[in-house]
Image 1 (tube, helix red, strand yellow):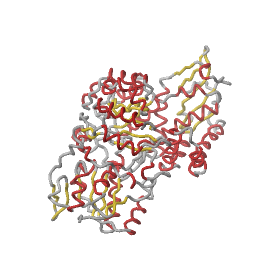
Image 2 (cartoon, rainbow, N blue to C red):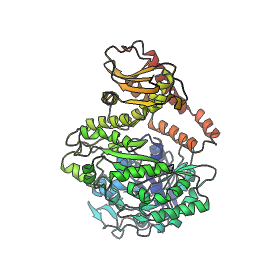
Image 3 (tube, one colour):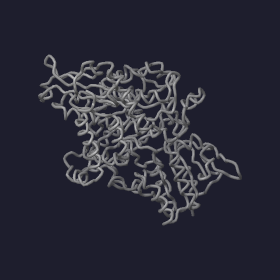
Image 4 (cartoon, rainbow, N blue to C red):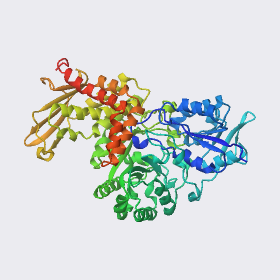
Length: 608
C-alpha cells in the first residue's frame, strides 16, 4: 500500500495572464505526474476552475469534500506566489504539500523556508514523485529536499530519465473544464516529443531542469498524437519542445507516420533554431502537410556581441535564410526578441523592430530580459546588482525586473512599447476607405498593446498611458511612410483621412491616409504647426481605462473561442452562437465601440 493514497495535483497559474491563447496552460506537467501514480493510489484529482479566479475556492471546497492526503503543486517562477497561496490552503486542512517545477528546482531551500511547503521535488518529477507517493519523504528518494528536525535534508541529485519512451502519456482525462471543453477535448493542446536541449543559452533554465536533449521515438510520439487527433475538429497542437528539429531524421519519421495514418487535422506550432530549419529544408513540405503553420524562432538580438554574451549560437544570415525557406513552403515564422541585456542601451534597442522587419518577419514578439533563478543571466544580473525586483509575480517575460548599464527599468518598459509600435503592420490602414474604418483598425492595434502593457501589474494606468504616448511620439518623430497600389486593395478612398492619437493636445501623433501620385499613402508624424482639425481623435487615457475594465480571463475566453473558429472556419455556427450569447462578448464589444464613438465625439474639443 502506498504511503499517500489520495492525491490532488495543481499547476499554479501565472499571476497575470498574457493575452496570447496559445500560451495558456494545458496542465500537461501535472498530467504526467498523474499518469505516473495512476495505478498506485486510490484517487487522483485536479480541482475545477483552474482557468479563472475561482480556483482557490474550488480547491478549498475539494479538500473539504473528499479525502486528500497529498497535494502536489507544480510552479514556474511567475506562478510561485500563487503556488504558496495554494499550499497555504492545503495546510489549512493539514495536507502534506510537495512542490516541484522550475522555480522549486532552482531554489529548493528558499521554497522550504515557507512553512506551507513540506517537500520539494528537484528536476524531472515523474520518478521522484512516484517514490514520494509510495514511500513518503525519505532519504531513499533521490531528487528530494524536505524539512527534518529543524533542518533541510537533500537526498542527492536524481539522473534525468534516459529512456523517455518509458514515461507514461499524460493523463489528460483529468483536466478541468476550460472555456467549455474538458479533459481530452481541449482544442488547444500540447505535446512534448523530446526533453532537454543541446544548447545552453544564458537566459534559459532548461538545462537546470532537463539537461541534455533526449528525443522520444517516432512511434511513441505518433501514438500520443493519435490520441489527440479529431477528424471532425481541427485542434491547435503545440509541439512545445525546446527545439523540435534537433534530429531531422526523427522529425521526418514522425511526419511520415502521421501522413500514413491520416493524422493531419491539426494546426501545429513549434519552436526551433534557424540553422535547424535550414537543415530541415528537404522535409518542410512534409511538415506543412501534417499541419505545421508557424515556427517560432529565438532570434533574440540583432547584435552579434549580445548573442555571444547570451551564448546564443545564432548566425544572422541563417535567420534570413530560414525565414525565406518557411515562407516558400507556406509556413509562417514568428521571431522572438529579448531586449534589456545588461550591455545595451536605448540606441541599441531602437533598431530591434527595424531589424525584425528587414528579416521579412510578419510577426515578432519583443520580451524583456528576465533573470529566472537557475539561469546564468540570474547570476550575472545579481552580481552587478541589476535585478530591481524579486516580486515573482512579475517574472513572465513582459515585466522588466532589471536595469541595464544604460537603461533603468521604466526605460525598458518604454522600449518594449516602442518595439511593438514600431514593428506593427500599419499597412492594414491602407486598405481602409473612410475615417471610421481607419479608427477601427487603429483601435484594434492599440487595444492589443494596452493589454500587453497591462500584463505588468506594477504599472498604474497613468504610467501605461504615458509610456504608450512616449513610444508613439518617438516613432512618429521618424516620420514613417507606407505606400500601396490603390488598385491592389480594390477599395476607393472616399477622401483623405486624418486621425489623431493623443495623451493630451500637446502629446499628439497624426495618422494621415491619402493618395499621392497614384499611390495610397499612410504617413505617421507629429502635428504640423498649421495642421487642421482631424477627422477623429483617439484618447489614450480612455483606451487604457477601457482595457483595464476587462479581466484577462474574460479576454482569454474570447480569444480561445476565436482560435477554435479560426481553425474550423466551415464549422463555426455552434461556436458563433456560443459567442453571441456570451455576455463577455458584448461587454468587450461595447467597450470597443464606446471608444470608437468617443473618438469622433471628442473631435470638437480636442484642440484641433
